[in-house]
Amino acid sequence: MFEKIKQKGFQVMPLHHAEAILKHDMYTAVDELEKVLFDIRIPVEELAPKRS
Image 1 (cartoon, rainbow, N blue to C red):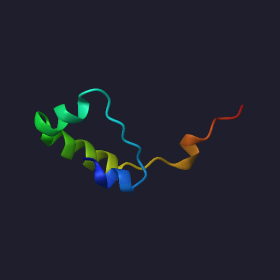
Image 2 (image 1 turned 180 degrees about the vertical axis):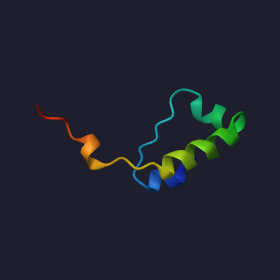
Image 3 (image 1 turned 90 degrees about the horizontal axis):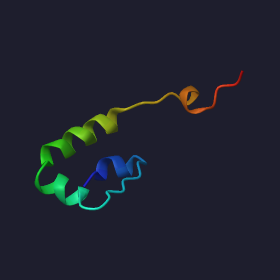
Image 4 (image 1 turned 90 degrees about the vertical axis):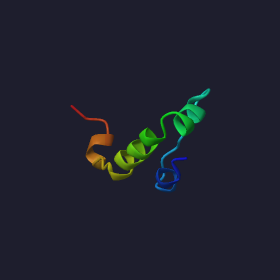
């Protein structure tokens, strides 16, 4: 589950029963989440702390 985004560098850590729930009850949500996260781009400027 979430193999594409793991290969891209995301760290995925499902807690408790989240993985089972997503796999069996909300499997379409997994595809949607992975697509959104795979396509996300965050400019490096937004990751650095702002200096006054």
